[in-house]
Image (tube, rainbow, N blue to C red; front, top):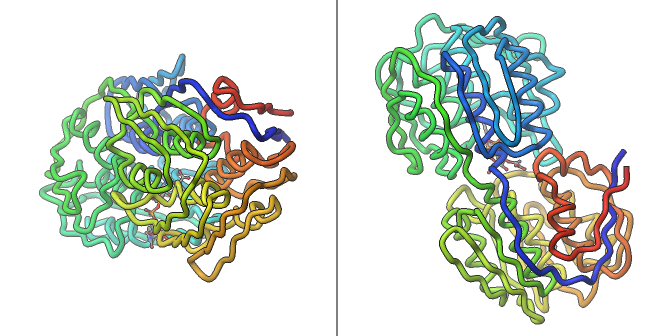
Length: 416
Ligand code: EPU
């Protein structure tokens, strides 16, 4: 199994290009299921989760071609309505095929994704919404079986603003008869990106990016050619890397507007953050102040940046209170950071981080995607050589991360 070895103590300097957003690309590629004809998506990141999605789409009968960050998908000949356990268990986002399959083929059989390291992650709201749209749903043998000869627009209230739940229901409602209103919808940039692509396909969606999304059903959707937005979490990870290493990084081809929550907090730590169009420059400082964060649905501080920010706080000159409000078990990185000398106490969904003057390198184990990134960040400043194991988590969501860090001056390598 691959591992990443990082030697700490090299300030990062230079420019880095941001890849397309994983969490925007996944639902957008899956939205092809709703169309006839060949779709072309550019700026698709080369990631394990994208490969898993394309495998699933092929299993459903899609014709898929990939070259140079471009993916072409033709779903004209869908022949299967089942997403099997073996494909879904590798990637929870596979549940996103449920809405489009029900809308297009009138039926779907999708394996229940189950829990994951960061929490139970139920899909009750996806199912509740589909039932409101008129689908008959049964849970049998670990699968969701949905049958919907006639989806009809409905008023749907989401108890919590779920990202993939909002996406699934938008994709089901675009072909339903009449108007659907999603209330307390998620407002993440990835929701807007999906709505934009669906509208380009001929859907009639308004309000994406607010908590009330209105969808007027149409008869059919056409194929499109479109570009995936930049990855805000990859951007944020490099911003934190600059702040941690007293580096000077210019992050190119990103969307600074999507990172207001993080930018504000980074400035409070003392980092110098300058925005210039689609670029962000972060200049780290010697003195890192302790700053509190609380993860919230967008536009609040993203849970997907909590682990990385905690690592920054572990070498701050102060105290920081970190509250995780989205997932109940997203502190798996804490025990590994503590093995590197961090001073962190966890109580329920909060962690108190007392900054230390130095981390010391250690072999560590990545538990999930963003935890893996936080351990690489820790390795960048720790004294000695850190060995990050189980990096397959990292390959699910960060494209070419070790090369990007190496070009910025990090001493980092992958050992196979
Ligand atoms: N929830 C429910 N019921 C549901 C759905 C969600 O109670 O039916 C709860 C969850 O348990 C959680 C909260 O709602 O407490 C928010 O979960 P959400 O559904 O928004 O998460 P998700 O859609 O499964 C997406 C991203 C995650 C990201 C979260 C939160 C994708 C493919 N995944 O997950 O990304 O952390 O939103 O922003 O878009 C990552 O990229 O590392 C990652 C985990």
